[in-house]
Amino acid sequence: MREHCGVIGILSLDGHNVSSMLLTGLEALQHRGQESWGIAVGRHSPYRKMGLVSQGLEEDYGEISKLAGNVGIGHVRYSTTARSNLKNAHPLEIGGSGGFSIAHNGTVDREPLIRDLKQGGWLPPMGMTDTEMMGLGLYQTVRKQKDWREAFERFNPKINGSYAIVILTTKGELIAARDERGFRPLCLGWHEETSSYIIASESCALDAVGARLIRDVQPGELIKVDRNGLQEQLFSVKEKHAICPFEYIYFAHPSSYIEGVNVYSARKNIGRLLAKKYPLVGDVVVPVPDSARPAAVGYSEESGIPFEEGLMKDRYRRKGSWRSFIEPEKREEVIFNINSIRRVIEGKEVILVDDSIVRGTSSKIIVNKKLKNTKKVSMLVAFPPITYPCYVGIDFPTQEELLAYRVCRTTQNLAEVNQKVAREIGVSFLGYNDVDGLSIGIGIPKDQLCLSCTMGDYCCLRYKPEVRTREEMKS
Ligand code: SF4
Image (cartoon, rainbow, N blue to C red; front, side):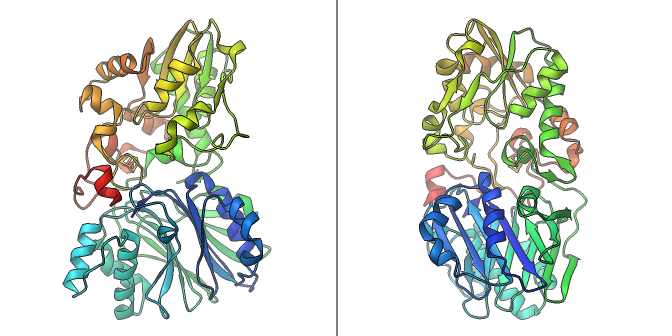
């Protein structure tokens, strides 16, 4: 299973029931995954449900309210390759009694894990997900080592990919770990009223429960919380990290802080840099809702061209609040729920700002259907051209799906890419950000960012995973 999701784990040292905080935290992480969710609390078996957390609470409140304990983990899921069904929802139980429940955000290559399990004389059944394989490998290792840090130190070299995980053991311990490159975010917080340590994918989950952010979990760090308190240990150190910039541009919540950088500020900075790089003439700056809004504000402030909400998502319709990238099969349906504000755009020269272009489907619909009565549309894109697949957790796994690759292959000539993609989408001008602008805008050096999908350099992985089609990956 290769996923991009949200995780949370809470342990109250005072013995408070953490269920409601887990649920509140998961709702705050809902933007990271809307297909299924689950929690494992105390000694209860994991409760898992398809759909949104709020829907599940409405339908099953009686059952959910029986889940009580001073420690628990939770997960919201957005599947990228394994099937979206209840069986694959997290937390997953590993190892039966004496084992643990695990929730995973990231993508782990299954092939080395299969080889490892086979070497141990065990053939993983068809359809076993990467999280289950990783969990089983960890379970076997920790049973031998009797110590979580040592188990991670030993098992980590067999893991090719990204992971930010939380684990609930049957002894009532909360374990959290982040891969040594730090692809996916993970942070540590403290909730004063209940004396709880909280680990979460993003700090917006801490805000939601009234906890304070202590710090990011470091790449290669293991955190263990039990009734005696917190233990922080490194199991692997790599000088070069590979923080995913797509988190800042699209995926994470604007209020979150990742590596000390506020996501909203990063997006706005990038808008300002785009205004310097591409000083266009226009009547209004319009964002593609919702994640491009801060970049559009930044562009508007720097250029002096008024910011206007020319496109708005209808949040009251079924798919209005769903995110188009997360719902690839229903992308057109999502985009059709964006309304144009005609008074803002009609007859105007519009500077359209978007967070990224992956497949180009939604950009074309917006330009051709939602902005058709404008005088002219120019487009700016916060993320550089995406021409290579992501193997570490974002759902653009096949190169042939990527618009920039389809029209330009892997050329690094930005002017050429701008021109060809502009023609394909149907705008007068298109200007992509470049990797320098991305790094400066976020405020993290290039050598600490993963740039694989735009540069094609996969050195942040142990080795480049096997390229497969979307259908092969779903099987
Ligand atoms: S390949 Fe792209 S989307 Fe995937 S982790 Fe790296 S930067 Fe993020």
